[in-house]
Image (tube, rainbow, N blue to C red):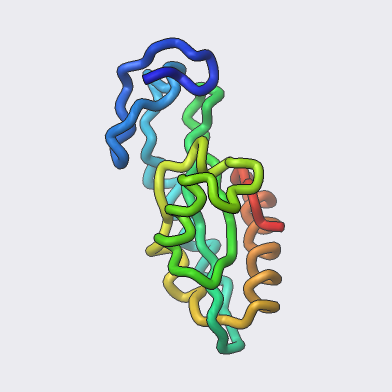
Length: 145
């Protein structure tokens, strides 16, 4: 398989999907480290939903093609299940700028279990608030419109 950034042939395998990742990722561990994950979980615990509805907020973890060990977070909202929406992203259906399609390594489902069954308006507000807060805390964020 070819690296999406430099088009060089790569043998580095993506741990979750069994496909190749960019060659610059040779030293890259696709899984975020424990400190990164724990801090993210603490931040997300602060967000609560107050209305009832059919939407949910989801997070996807993105690897950084620049070759360093930074990870990005994609924040989105959907009326589908997070797995269905992630699958659509990976297929390119309503993928926007393609961040999840091109760089997605998996959902962060356990972090957003409490952000389900909320109204459309509240889900959009939460999406924006979460993205802003994560940026303030130093996370690289995509999505979160």
